[in-house]
Image 1 (cartoon, rainbow over the protein chains, first blue to last red):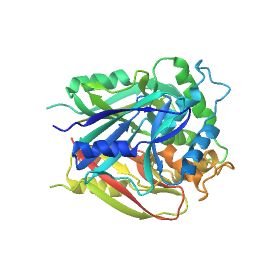
Image 2 (cartoon, rainbow over the protein chains, first blue to last red):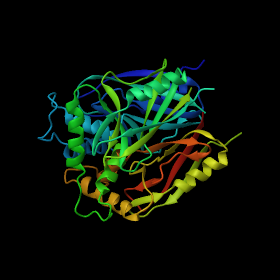
Image 3 (tube, each protein chain N blue to C red):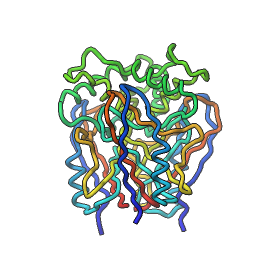
Length: 134
Length: 134
Length: 134
């Protein structure tokens, strides 16, 4: 019987985007599933999962820069841990992505990659990959 | 045959986040499904579904505060209902979350909860929970 | 055997939201699937998929206006293509939406429509629709 759920651990920097496409594709390949969907889920409240460009590393830099410019540490925050901006970034990024599987491959666009988004690191983090056949 | 779709009604305040994890978990338990995914979907255009911290209530307060600071009522809005800011908040929050089911439980992180996000209440609102086995 | 994956091509303007609900519903109808979910996925990194109001066209105008006000071309961007703002808009919008299928219909709210969001056009774009029965 195919294994359809996997937990992956990663060590993050203080802030930024870690590419995870290869790890997710390796699990899809291992599962043997040819058609279906794949849910990549972050169980954290100060991190997220996104899809964005895989080519020019400046795009990752600009995304990090923009997240801090647009969702800064606001003076009115009350949460004593001091990381409410990271909780907001987590909600606007989203805790998961859903990707179609076709012919055993993640059906991503040519310039797309999956990223784990760290907004309050460095930490040891995890994400889950769940495959549904169909 | 298992019932895999449920509609839930809630009464919201003018603005803010209502926890819905327990209601969703109760339906997953009732379904008897042990492995799969669960889609929680808001059929509204001035509300959304998110996942964020379940512990310190200040995080909810800070999230509400940030949504109003960062996505305010802009002077250039044309929509006569005057709630375009709520439509924008709805799009950046997202209309749904997808959560993995493992061993009959929502596979949420220790600090994660599901929230219904009201951006233009008070209203009687609904959300759907759909379970897929696999 | 039902066809459960479809690629759709569209021609976009420089910026804005194209309604795609009818195209997605037509494919769901053609598939014959009565219960399940549907994933609508954009394979682009300067575009996205969202759900928002289908009635007053001013809401679409206001959404476009807000995306440009809140996620502008920041002076600190380094990416030489000059479209980092579009990459940021793509991440906060999200690359996909997941909609429940019930009784052969997309289970959308009365005021909801699916939109393809162009943030760096005009271009020839595509999106995928994947159906899972269950």
